[in-house]
Image (tube, rainbow, N blue to C red; front, side, top):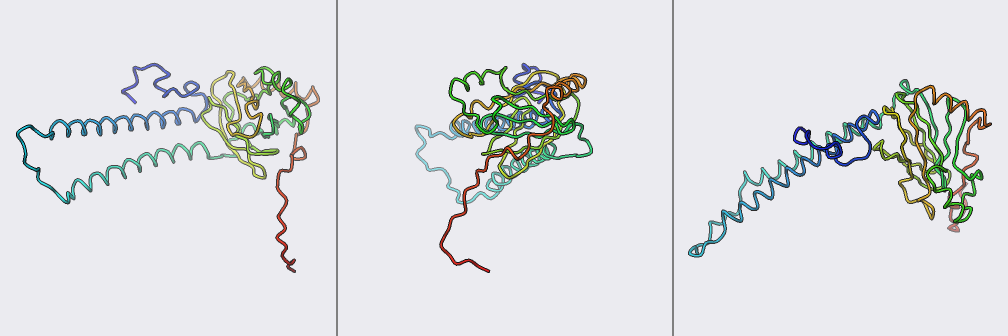
Length: 278
């Protein structure tokens, strides 16, 4: 890491989106990413260097017609090129698991805000569970989003998509569900995404640490209008977050958009013509 300390911020982050400390996990992901690339580049330089050295040092000379000594086995060398790759993979595995465990662990006692996210064709529903309010994308008919290409083109404008509000410095626990098919909840600057899967609830926990506006999207090809599944994210001070919750309540968006709005996508069980068991 010290070798790139004098580079631009983008290079230091391995051209990853976002900035330093966007959430409590992003710096760890960036360190794993850039560290892996540095290790890979060093191995590449070593391997190419050894190859070039062998080509130059052991090339055939004009007056040399003698066949070099042929070795069938070279146990130390074989042990070296077996042990070193295994060691490298082990080190990478250790740091990957350590970073992954830090991201996926859930501490219920640390939760400040609980938000339920529903992915659906072709937008998102947000339930702010602690405040008993909700927000959603347009159009309002949650089970019939395909309103024609003209409506979708207008909806695709970034200022028309739903906005998720998060309080800065507060630990948010997300529960993620799907109303129809598999989607993937992704905020690129947070460097993490989680699938929303029919019939299954996924969770993750994150603490936004930098105020600002971010973009979110679906990262799973989920059908014809997958590209329209956009949303905005606003990381704001606690006071502004509380005000937004009050605004949603004042607009009548109280309660929760629950599973009653799901679309049943489970196929019927095939009839194989067998006898019924009792």
